[in-house]
Image 1 (cartoon, rainbow, N blue to C red):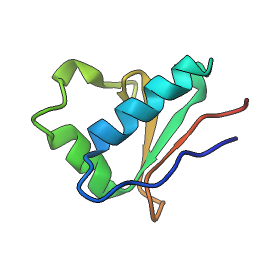
Image 2: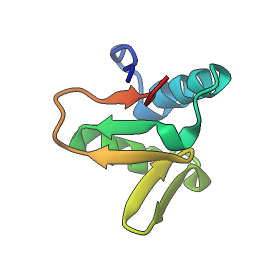
Image 3: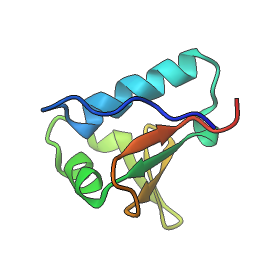
Image 4: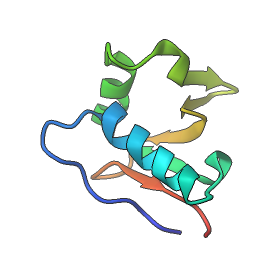
Length: 86
């Protein structure tokens, strides 16, 4: 399981993780194999960001997803994208 680099100051969760998800997909990682582990603050910022299209965040079966990637909220000191096995 690989994790991505840390955030840059002032970078929104949308911008940071959109580019990381796109890079992982380009590397051949399936969206269903990835997990976004977000701090509660970043999860809130992602859903409230006016620049994040409503269609990019979904809630189904008790699971929140961003660009089709499962989100786990809380329990981490820093938000990360886990690419899964690969």
